Image 1 (cartoon, rainbow, N blue to C red):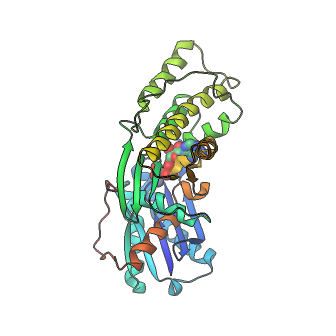
Image 2: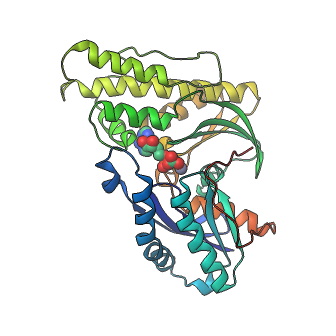
Image 3: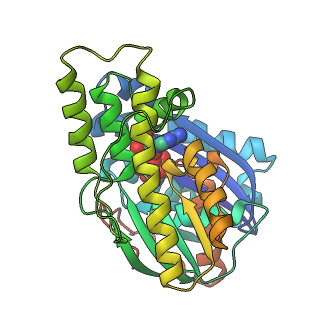
Length: 332
Ligand code: KG4
Ligand code: ZN
């Protein structure tokens, strides 16, 4: 079955064609980063306007890249939430209009479920049940996935999301937006043990990153002078290590507690090279199999939305064309 997926929940306008819920034939992503960068974060009104400009060319390009036309498509899936409603509405409306015009079944998809489902685009797919760590700009949740659409929260952040911890640190250090990518790159040449940042809530499967952020602020202020470019790699490598420690330790703990030897790590932060390296190494030691999508399917994309759409439409769960966008939509 060929599904066209559409994603516009935040600052990426994306469309993709996926075959049988497992193979991306195309994956087009128009990023607005360059525009929002100057404001240090996503400006919702600008995001909606940019989505409107990009949505049709992005969809056309996704069909072209896959070498198909709308007549070959068997169903359309779009992100319904959670996200910025003004942004979501652009992709959702385009999807509904196309479904109506081409008389195709349509499904609204949960963005977080999409992040988890991205793992089914990989060659190595996990079997159920598995433990899923979703780490993005707005989410840091550990779920038990018992089957498609069957999720139970095992742990979550009490304050900031992991992606936010990266983005806020980068802003504090004037490294630009989005912070995760810059810190990932700079940290490669730094010593992760140079500065000892606190590890919060040890022994629990819940997270807290706000103390870490404050600790970075105190560290920078306490020096009385700006962090030099030579010192930056050590500082960000140490900060990143505190986040990675928490994510790896707590997720493996949750998997052990649940007696599930399979862990899926997904969401934008899962593209972090140190996080990937540590999960694979420590999963091996713990006897837990680690599954992480390719980096391009970790950050926001529409192929992951098409994977969920494939399952929904295959099992007869169509949505009607009056489906609305929602800013909040808990998975469980
Ligand atoms: O999943 P995503 O693309 O969008 C949301 O659904 O939020 O995640 C975006 C988040 C941002 O906070 C960004 O800084 C972070 O993912 N991120 C990274 C990396 N690439 C993106 N964090 C750490 N290392 C990276 N390489
Ligand atoms: Zn996302």
